[in-house]
Image 1 (cartoon, rainbow, N blue to C red):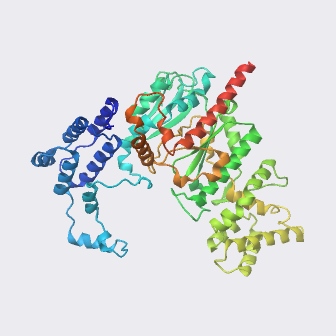
Image 2 (tube, rainbow, N blue to C red):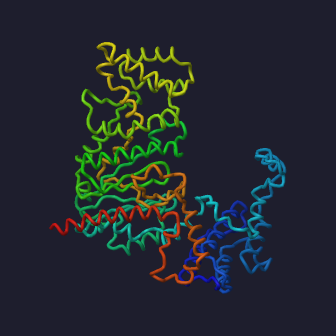
Image 3 (spheres, rainbow, N blue to C red):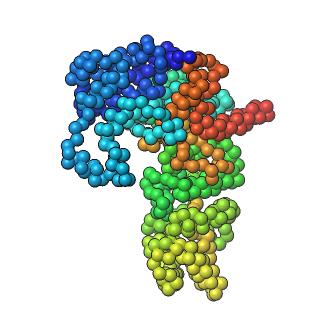
Length: 550
């Protein structure tokens, strides 16, 4: 069967082609122009001659100025012909000295013919190549504006997203008074948005194609009326939210820093989620926590119980302070357990202690340098005890000794000093070993996010503009199996739905069929949506139970 676009998707393709910045012959614009046209045609494949002609006509309109002369001179009838002509005419002519510099900086692997310059790559892209479905495409932020319309129309889970914010119609105006904000291309920020229905929200998302969607509180009236409300808007409810960022662990992670994250430092996030989830359930009685990977290097937790959503600002601050056990002195984190260890700290230690050696001593080798040993010493709050410990460790180990050896010596010394006589080690520092473990592995919360009743937080299923990754839900019970490095990018997802549709032809044959498989089920995003829907089922079951009790 001939692959043919539906009229709806043909119009979408034409709309996106018209939004591509025109090419007037400037050599520095050639690569971006070709990549965007190629990508749009890749998203909307067709073998129909009439549709090819229509699409090519739209492309020709985007070729202006001097470049239009090339189009007319070559009498090109297809994009491939025009593409080749533009590359031949406007590709950058690299000076010989520049070629030598690039060759010198290229990793030579034994075959000169394998060394390719960017200009050669541009020429070779014009030739048909066999698809490599096994390799995920590299995310290119420059074509995010072309990918977002397809993502929001075909992949974003609009119906479950609405069900979440609507809370089963359990309260009046809970959806319509919710503040939502959009961040558009070029950092255009739009606040005080609100919507009456799922269809209205979906239409606005698909129309504006936001780079980021933020969710705020439910207000006392429609947020869009903020200019006319006497005294301003007042938040009346909002999920209790937590934000944990890997950058807050930069002083103790040696594998990565800044925006980077790997499987080793993901273990900090894993333990943070486990400890926080247990505290919220056992100490506060909350049941409905939605855990989200932030798309780059952190995690968010949305506590959606009715009680949590109706906490006032003082109660939120109290919860945040209860869960925030770290104190900082001269930029050094410390924990004070006191004479009687609180049950929440004992529970946290049961979760953290089994992973301490693997994470701190092996993965990070935290005390394997003089700087690392000094960090350990600074956690000892008593100056005299700290100096004695430093002298002991210097006698026991040379600089660069492995963290495991340093830690074992520290534990032996602390235990021997605590039992030898009545001193600071048997009083103030009697829990120092456990305090260091808590200090290094306990969740490092951004408590201002939790305290803020009016704070807006990034919504699930957004695309992180810097990484292209989906802000995807995960199950805290399976957090150890979650791999942030393999979270799908928008490029990968669109490739997956194209590969599925090419294989089955289902999308082209029955684009309007309501029984057709949902597009996100064709992709690696499916698991995240399943986690989200399972969370919603438990949440909605709770609403039904309360309704029956009433």
